[in-house]
Length: 183
Image (cartoon, rainbow, N blue to C red; front, top):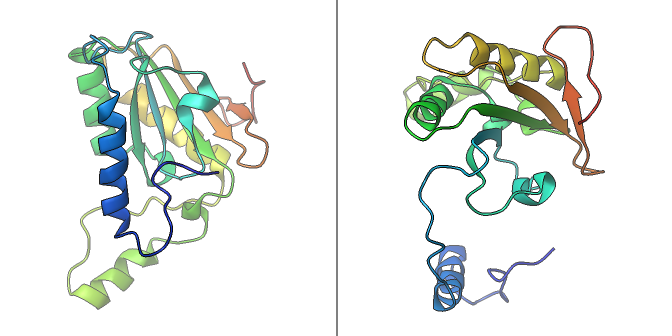
């Protein structure tokens, strides 16, 4: 897969190439005339993995959703903060959680924090949120969203695992009894 930011070696830093790609983009850009409220009233929480093209995978267009990404797609306090703003200030009602196969958080442990502390002399205040079972981690994330006192809408929360080899979503049931059929 190639993007306009890919350029031959020696063409400057990656950031230089991205800024140049932006200049090309901006030269043809037209204000879409929309505000920050997502048209579909949905927020998508997903892993930051570069293999996930959420808009393409979910058939989304610019302006359709809020997208919140972090390592693992984990529902942290900061994700709850973003979802709260998304719902209370910008009108979203649905939440979709997207984890994926082969996630890097399955290969590290919370020991990572202690290693960082040894290296830099300070332990991070955040948890790594590593996991071994992606389905269970999706369930835990759904539960965190459902039980947050800050969110207005918790009746349409669904979780999925994206297969990085096939591109298919597999829906995870909130109960501990396996997966639900993909929608």
